[in-house]
Length: 179
Image (tube, rainbow, N blue to C red; front, top):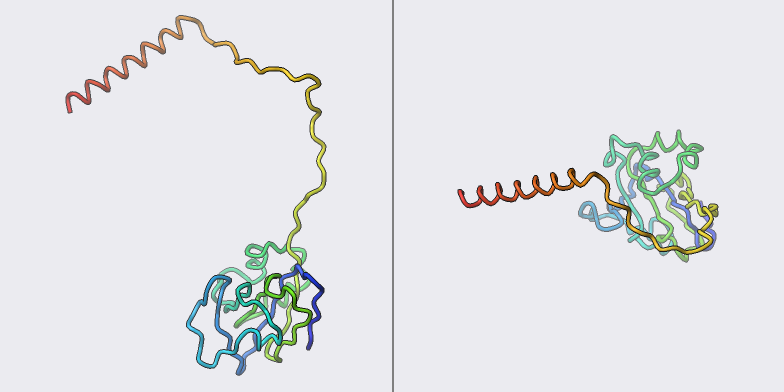
């Protein structure tokens, strides 16, 4: 099977790894999760293209339990739930290892020719930012200087607060002197 990718493909690509002789090293975007098995096949060879493994994940579904793969893709990759709903049954039924390719992993790649042990589950678009224009309230017609508000409270209340603060400071000073 050959998967043709459009230029600058912004989608997340998900593959399942079937049980069999194909072994891939488990990895995240930042590092290897485990020491690669001696017979681990490089990701580029498994996918039949020059992918950037820095932006690829290979992990066992059990590693994210109790989260489902759908939940993981929605939360970690910001894929809307409605985009995943078409493949919900397939995603929920997966077990074993999966390969998740971020858009930068396939940057500049026109086609993927995965080995038969890799099954393409789907390619999903991430959530898009809502950048629709919003109407703002009108600006003031004439600029003006903001003035501070007047003091509130009666002069008696203001004097009481000053005496309370001074009393607290005197008590604190006495406690420090005693200790």
